[in-house]
Image (cartoon, rainbow, N blue to C red; front, side, top):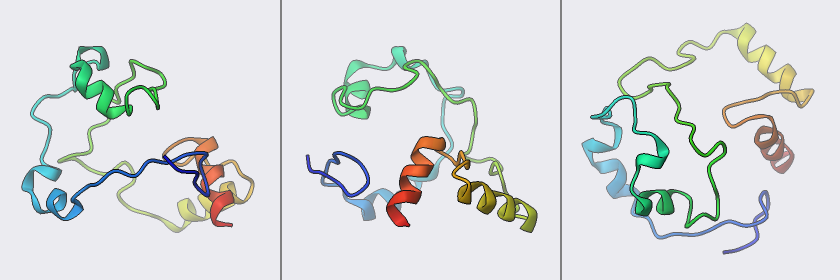
Length: 112
């Protein structure tokens, strides 16, 4: 565990990224849809996902119903008006982005 430039702490874990991207299973559609409820997952998976509870899920039982694998992207065609609108929102610190307003503003402050 170390202090980061953006977040208070970050973790380093050894990961073989080349092996992850080399497998066809990496981007394979889920065999089960929708995914099981969070509480139905085995404890060892919940612990692995949250680094043994260090980063709890909020809300704890939320599972996104949005299916990405094998489907269209949420925004599959970027238009000038959409980009200009997002840039304007970012300048006013009102761009929610993918991870919410707080995370978007935190990343923006770090790269500014």
